Length: 295
DNA sequence: CTGTAATCCTGCGAGC
DNA sequence: TGCTCGCAGGATTACA
Image 1: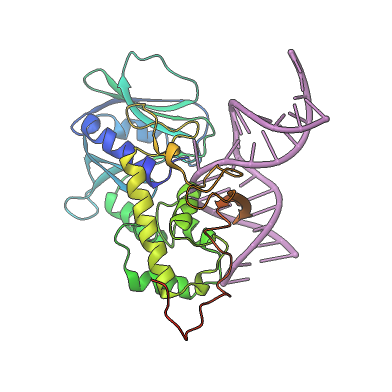
Image 2: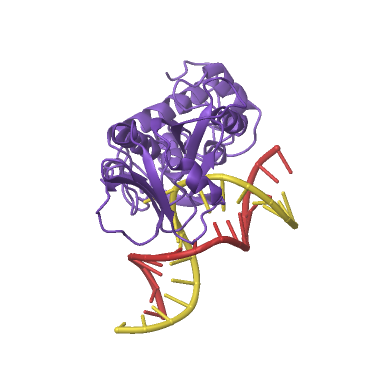
């Protein structure tokens, strides 16, 4: 579920609720999450104070005041959290009844708790000794943040791949944070068929896609993300952008622009929604260079 | 290189 | 009412 807008919303919600709080204890279920949690870290986290929260792609980093003396002077421990498909990361009152699928609970001062709930357990919560090492590792496998992408680099990246736009947008190494919903919505906004290959795009089309990605994600953040089923923000509220989808999950419904029926095909192993009227599969009907070009 | 399928899980809606 | 099947916001791996 959670793509960049949802993760960003969680971080913004949790920042004022968590910053300055101290972890007084840890509880967790016996069920395994996607990545292992080392028992000795329960004690390491206990007593730590939260100094801030950050997002990178779909990752959440909770900075702790626990120093890491082997690295740079200000290096410190960090919690690295990924919400997977159904993860929920919320701060609640400590006496709030426990829901099912609750896997990690950080007990906090002021009678609060930071809870990680995840029905499908594709998510993860890890304790990392060094924020610097963690940042380095993440940066080495993840592409740039999708806002203010460099136009030249974006065009160059697309020019050298024959993969479909859908596959490229889902590739976290190409651009961090985009998932199935926003890949489809960005392609629609750019009027590009998701099955077009990267190298088939003209410079103008590359620019359109780059701008569309930023616009769609920005709008989604303004609506606090999308809730299809499970997603909630850091205080437990649902998102609102699902009501503004142009094509995602709307197969058969009329395109908001041209009224053609929205189509759904399988691309990159994922359902991909697009408007057959607005998003042409091929550029073969190129306007001859003789006359004026659109735009 | 690209694409496809299976894998990790639980739950829900469609269809019979 | 109940069953099976396919699919779901993610990410990785193996294989054609």
